[in-house]
Length: 302
Image 1 (cartoon, rainbow, N blue to C red):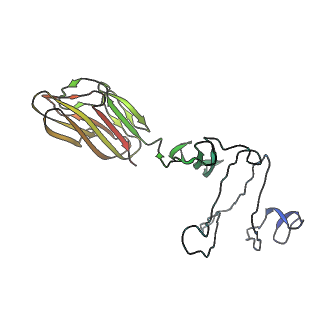
Image 2 (tube, rainbow, N blue to C red):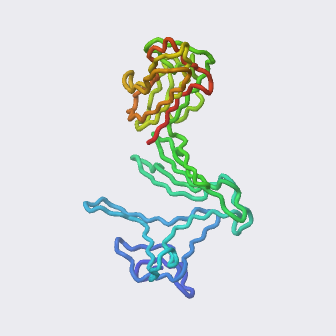
Image 3 (cartoon, helix red, strand yellow):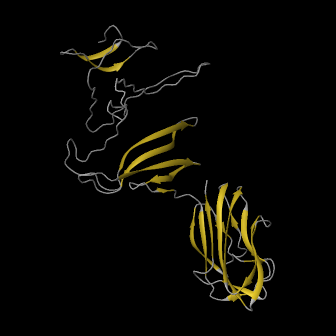
């Protein structure tokens, strides 16, 4: 049974109730809803699908538009604002249990397709971080898909802390409690003198050559911290942080007594580029490669 605008009726008690709208590519007008329209399903998925068929030489933008008019002009939210709520309650049909920690509260997905099926592309999710009591504690996370694998790339915690689990970072910490007099061109980041204390993302460390290779291109913050022991009253030495084997001299100085060299640089690195830390001759002085005295840090800024 249908009415004059093509709406399929399932009841005519008091007000007409419709279970579908068939407009045949013609806008349906004259349908007014005062208050809220509720769609309810028990033990079943329930969805509202907006589908726009057909190629066109004119761009089409199917979507959901929420418009709110208000005469309030005093600023703030006194007049309200458009909103889309995603709510996940505990219990079956009422508030019979609290939202637990670690629950996905709701999300927004984007999709694409291959020649046969739809594929999830990106996702934003609200996540509870503690069981709800009289207050809520929740954060938000962002997921992207790389070669078919969807994973979290960034999270904003309930306290506002921003973390990026795939943000490339590496820390090499001195592991050799000895003083070494290095000849010119010596590689300082090998496993002989360093251990990996922190490694995440896609930075790879060659423990034999000391080279740190980049997979994700971008700007990297690099800092070296080296403790220098002087064998006599004065000494000289240089340390280089190199890009693909050359450049980036970070320190050159004359030493009078034991000292610490701390240097930093920002490098623009392409995928496949590698960095290393190389010494010039430190005779008659040496570098102390012990823990808490010598370290090398590298972090992707973006």
